[in-house]
Every structure is written in structure tokens, then in C-alpha cells.
Image (cartoon, rainbow, N blue to C red; front, top):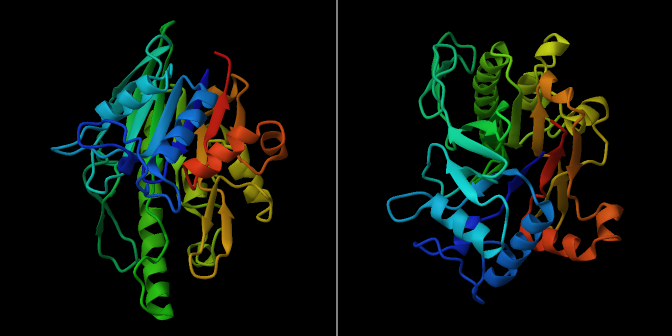
Amino acid sequence: MRIATYNIEWFNSLFDDDGRLMFDQHWSGRFNVRRDEQLAAIGYVFQWLDADVILIVEAPDHSKSRSTVDALERFAHHFGLRARTAVIGFSNDTQQEIAVLYDPSVCSAIHQPRSTTAAPRFDNEFKIDLDIDAQMDCVTFSKPPLEVGLTLAGGRELDLLGVHLKSKAPHGARSPAEAMRMSIANRRKQLAQAIWLRRRVDEYLVDERPLIVLGDLNDGPGLDEYEHLFGRSSIEIIMGCERPLTDQLYDPNARQLLVDETAQVFSAEFRNKETHDVLRVLLDYIFVSQSIQNFGPAWTILNPYDHRISQDHPVLAAALLRASDHFPVMIDFQL
């Protein structure tokens, strides 16, 4: 089985209100890329992935006038994808939804949100003392995680948690001091979201069903100096690094960075428009429970700079660079 996660930069801008693909020469939301070019590149990457299930981060908008499901299923039909049936969870007002495309001949998928006292439903509020002042703060998700129950054709069941955690970037800061304040506040909220998510993970692990947590976590071990202020990254919280091995989640790329923060492993590339500096970071993950590890999973980041892709599959490398500022991560395992 192949499961993937892919953050597609401003996917929403490539569809009209009826969910039709806009193959035209207008600029896309991606810098210096036209809409027809980005659509063709994304379609090529999806065809190459040929995944049974793919989590789409920043999926097309769902609102009164737009449908995420219609847009994604039209996209899948146009490019002849096996993963052609879409599922969305709680919609949001950012025009960046979290959704899944899956192959209905391989499995069925439903949105099955949970709610407990320890971990409320993801479209609700989570109360936690963020700044240790004996006052409870209310935390929300701008993009509520997607909880999907998969039932495979043979009857086996597994759970997916699709996530897009809050960015730590100080967008809109007008001074270095304001940027610092915003960065600290954003990281504090992101860590609270990670704690909320980890509590839900614990509930799934009690059920002893195979679990996969995947998506864009906007964080990584050693990613910035504020991590030392808080002691750990949101990645370590979600993985449960301090827990017994049977309760930990595993992703080899995250584990590699925990051991060596200088390791050259990354899933996203950003360019500073003013300095033109390039930042390459690991933001996209597929964490699995111990039961999935027993199936011998293999992880792959479709990194266009990897010589196995750049040299052996130059068309794919070019498509990856044109499609998004993130690269897909996939996992293969034998059930």
C-alpha cells in the first residue's frame, strides 16, 4: 500500500467556483508560474506518485460557493488518477483545506471526528495554560486536523490523522522586536496544538488500531532558536519521544534530524523575495504507530535535488519544482 502527503501551494487558485480546472495563461498563486503550467506539473506528480491514498494539504477551498470534493474529483478525473474519490473534514476560512483522495477499489474512507474531555473535537477549543500564569488559554486550529477511518478491501482497518499545524513565521511583523514577540506567541500556540494532537494519538493507540499521522507540521528538530526556549519541538511532542517505545510514533526523517540537526533532509524550499536566500527545511512527515512498523514500511521524499530523481527522472524533478514549494512524502508497506 502507498500513502502520501503533499502540500500544494495555492492549489485553490487553479479552480473556478464550479470546481473546474483553469488551464489558462494567468499567473497562479505560485511565483512566476502560470496556472496551466502548475496544473500540468501537479497532475504529473500525482500520476507519478500513483498512491492508494494521498493527503492534500492546502486543498481547494470549501465554502458556500466552492466544493473541495468537486474540485479534487474533477482534478483526479482529468489526470486519470486511481485515487479519485475525495473526503474532507472540517472546512475552514483560510482557503486551504485538508482533504484526502483515495482509490475506492483499494479502500473506503470516512471522516470520523472524535471528542473527549482530554482532547476535544478539533473544530472546538482546547484549554491549556500556555504561558504558565495559572490562567487557562483557549487554543483553536485555523485548519482542524482531518480524522479518517480507512477500511481496506480485505476488511483491515487503520486510522489517518491529517494535520497542518500553525506556522511559526512572524507574518506582518514591523520590527525585529515585534517579530520576536510574534514568533514566540506562534510557537507557543503551535506547541499547544501539538499537545492536543498527541492526546488524540494516545486515544487511538489505546484502541490498538494501526495509526498514521501525516501532513505539514511547520516544525522540525533544531529548526529555530526558539525551540531551546521551550525545550522541545512540536515534532517531539507528537512523536512521544519520552514515552515507552510501544507508544511512540516513528518517522525516519524526523528521527535522523533528532540525532543530527545538520542532516541534509528536507521536504520544502522557500526563497526570500528580498535577499533571494533559499531555505530548505523538513516540514512534512508521515508518522506511524508500532503496528505499521511491523509491516516493513519504506519512506520516500520526492526531493527534486536528490540525484536519484534529478538524474534518473528529470521531467519529474522539473514538475516538482513547478508544482509547489513543498515536495511529497510517501510511505510504502505490505499488508
